[in-house]
Amino acid sequence: MVMLFGSIINYLDRVNLSIANTTIGKEFGLDPVQMGLLLSAFMWPYALANLPAGWIVDKYGAKRIFMWGIIVWSLATIAGGFVQGFMSMYITRMILGIAEAPFFIIGGQVTQQYFSHEERGMASSVINLGPKIANGFAPPLLTFLLIWMGWRGMFITLGVTGFAISFLWMKYYREEYKVEQVAQVKKGKVNFWALFNHPTSWWFNIGNIGSSYVFWLYFTWLPTYLTTQRGMSLTQAGWAAAIPFIAGVIAVPIGGWMSDYLIKRGMNVIRARLVPTVGGCILAAVAVIPVNYIEDTTWAMVLITISLFAGALRVGVLWALVGDLTPPEAVGTFGGIQNFASFIGATLAPIGTGYILKATNSFDSVFVVSGVLCFIGAISYALISRKITSEDLLPN
Image (spheres, rainbow, N blue to C red):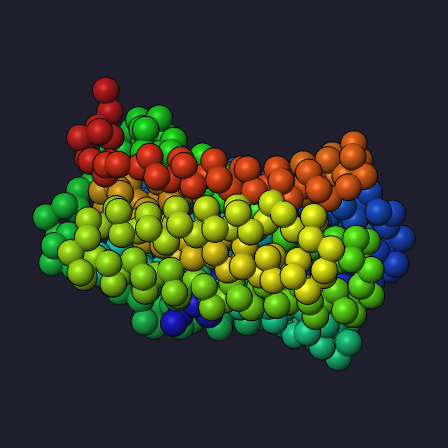
């Protein structure tokens, strides 16, 4: 539960600027280009920091790195409440991105340490419910804080909450391994490039890029699509856009439960994880491609909801699969690599959509491209066939 609360505050600290951007932009006199730069200031440091973050977690342990991470990102959030202009805010957002990078890597390591194969899918799904809960409830919650105490007070309050999570972590976290894992734990060095270039890693990463693209298309462009193409007001678009993300909240534990159930029924661990992953990506792709060709807005929203629900089935399962595919000494490093790949897809989605809209002035190709990429991701996931062993990762 501490990891769940941590993942919620982790995402709230990311999206607080999105809620307050209009207010902050007016106070500092920022133009749209400057605000766009601020909104992206978290993303690229976060993506890049995932690569060394995984290695750092493996080397120094989850307990220590979680503490340093949440302290630094909470301080960065609090500092955001005291900034005086564009540059100081940009710096705090960069620090936030770097400090938050280890969190979900640690989540993958914790699920491997504490849970058996038959339990990891659901455990990982609980941790990864945080982003979906935050996406669904951040707008009303943060808007309330913004109105009640101003944007500076909102930032400071979120930062202080992070320190409360760090206290719970220190109180309850203990490093331990399931009996089946004790003999596997090694302290040898891991060859990063051997891990990165392993076929399993490539299939995993291509799958993450393709499947993440669809989610971040919805996350960044769905409200705009509903207002410009479907004629909704901002209020209508806000409520309508919440429906698919609520479906995503429901889907995450279902995917974890499904994979755990299949393992308990005797299915191979990797195959059991891939059933909701590959099946969900295929359904997400099929549902998203025809969205803009459907004239009825209600049916278009049904397809979007199905697509986001199906894509979310993989969320917790993938982090469980990180622990299932790799030896204990490489879980953090592999988690960092695959999360880096996910944020390549996350970065490409808003940029690619912008270029497509500029070239075609239509969302037709936007949804088709995202569906094709998601289908490619499904194929790539399906090609994962074997675990990465300690022998694969020994330095040459």
